[in-house]
Structures are given as C-alpha cells and as structure tokens.
Image (cartoon, rainbow, N blue to C red):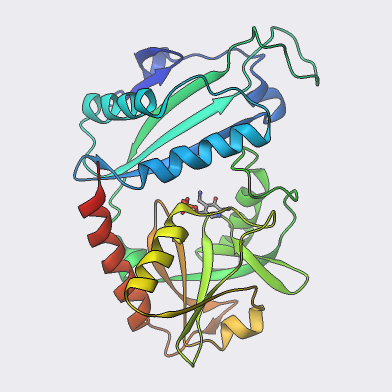
Length: 287
Ligand code: PMP
C-alpha cells in the first residue's frame, strides 16, 4: 500500500514513521482541537474560514497556536503536493503537547503544542450520498456543552453514528430537549412548506460550521428566506426538504428521519440547487 506523507511538528514523513509521544495530552486527555479543509482540483476550499475557527477554538482553550495563516497554508499546500491530492480532505490536529508526565494542569508555555496534518482522498463531488441523499436516525445529544469548540473529543459522535447505523440509517441527528442541535458531524437544515430555510442559531450548543456560513451567503444571493432558529424532530419530519452541511459532505440531502420519509423520499430541488451552487462557488474561490 502506498504510504501517505504526513506532517508532524515541522517534518514531512512517511505515515509509518510518524510519531507523537504517548504522554501527548491529545491522547491522554483529548486536550486538542482540529480542522478539516476540503480539496477540489488540488485546491483548498473555505481555507480562511477554517483557519479563523481554528484560532477561535485554540483561543477558547488557552492553547497556543504559534503559526501564521500563511505558514499553515504552506503546510497544507505542501501536503497536497506531496500526496498528489486532487479531491479529498486535509486534517489538521493541534494538541497541547506533552510535558512528559500525566497531569491535569496545563503545562507551562515552554511545552510546545503538537501539530499534525494528514490528507485523506475522497470523491466529494460525485458521491452517492450527495446525489441520492442520506437517511438519519435521531440520538440524544450527550456531548459536552461547549460544542462551539472543535475539539478532538469525538467519542460520543462516533457512538451516535454507530447507533444510527445499527438502526439502519446512514448518520445521526442529535436531539436535546426535543430540538435538533445538529448532525453528529454536520449542521442540520430544513426547508419549510412556506419556502423558508431554517438552521439552528449559533450558540455553545452547536459547531459554527464553515460550510453553513457559506451556504447562508449563497442562500442570500439566491434571495431565499432564512431563519436561524431551533426546530423539532417532528417539524423536520414534516418539512418540504431536509439537508446537512459540512466540509466533507458539502450540501447533502436528507431523505428520511427515523424512517419517516421527507417529502416524496427523494432529494429536494432546493437542496440540489444549493449543493451545486456551493460546489460551483467553492471551485471559484478555491486557493
Ligand atoms: N457540526 C459538527 C458537530 C461537525 O463535526 C461538523 C464538521 N466538522 C460540522 C458541524 C460542520 O462544520 P464544517 O462545515 O465547518 O465542516
């Protein structure tokens, strides 16, 4: 199997030679944040948005991020080049590093953070879920309450996705107090019968999706009405359309929620229009 080249703390190395300490706080305490930027035609999409959110995530956790956007862009581009990545994702993982012992207290400023980047090839534009839509199953939102920070604590989203798969669905929508917060790894949207797009308002309850922000811009450009508010599972099940947004799924139609078909059970027109507009706009803006 071909070895990817990955980036670890300043070096580009074959994946089999890539190492971080067993005392790394990301490993021991999930003391880390991450970002995922997608690549189309070998170029990065929504890169500045992802780097802005990375700075915010690190800032909220008092984690140092001693690299400029330009340096991070160079590392992303070098990895894309070395792995000849045309379409897929670049993952950036940042942890509070290792002070050489296990300790809850944050280490002092002399402990450097750990920075790892790796690529993952994936067909993003011509995907089955993008053209046929996905089925979701609802799960209780049992994550911590600072979901606006993109941390590497992904155990509960993994559990929720497994439970959704066990229920015969493709992915999970998370529900708190009867209202949908977001998907296990994406933001949730509905289109009402009055033609209003609805997605939950930003707060500590959800991740501020970069794709969500761009789709809001596109919706405004298309003169679609938008409301940022929470919606219930029942409202979503009886909506005209449902879809999710994320860097790696763009805009993906949702065709069933807990086995209740949305509309006629096929991807809706507005979801399809937003998907192609997002892809077109992303190709235009890619760097
Ligand atoms: N919510 C959660 C919980 C996520 O994990 C993701 C994907 N990282 C998103 C929303 C979508 O964010 P983005 O559009 O920036 O990928």
